[in-house]
Length: 325
Image (cartoon, rainbow, N blue to C red):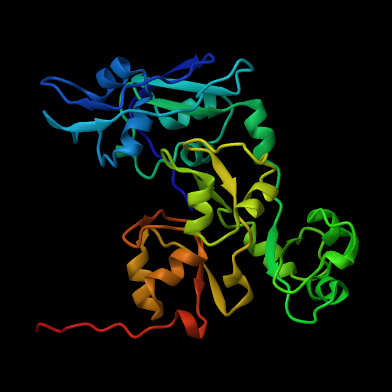
């Protein structure tokens, strides 16, 4: 369970206008520079500079350091759907939440805050707008990607997943069952399934989205997680030539790990490292990464994060340790 974080900060609300970031590619840190001053110089939010340069602390920069400060996305729009607070000395995260009628948990989740040390004067905190709040109450659709087997008919597949034949055809833009052939990948919408109640309930606890990194393409994401690009486009309603942008979140299909032996696990107080969870469960780091659409085996997962722990035979391994005592 996430705890309230109290810090001595004061929020000033800024509604960001339509602005296309046009930062230079690389900035070399000068004597006396702060991250806030750099963000002003390159016209880029501080949190974006921190994220794309893997800066562990706002004070952890040094003279001569070369920072990547280029990004290509709109971080505001004319409808006011993106609202920011610029933090100055004086108030708590709790009072910011009270002032704008949101919860502390919403602020923590939206800004990916893990500790009060993540917050600092002049940082811009994103606020959920009315549009974002409406979106957050919606349950993300749950899709599974299924490969048609030899001599398998669409009625068999519909029965297996507890959905109708017409729904499979509609979801996959197939006119009739003649289009169902061995080897093709079908997107199965599980929201209306009369089976897998456990899957629907548990999968809603997971983060079913992947956040696009700087300069990453949908093709690269598809290759990374071995999912056909056209399927990612289909479940995210992306046009054929539509590009993804940095920090955009894209919906991922239900992971195949759900259909094998597994455990749904909530990260303990203080957070836990992926390699520790792998060791404790005698499984490979890779199995946890693949089951949760993660990339870094050295990542420390935040307290309260819900993940899949795969326990099938293919995931198991024997960890070898050396006792130096």
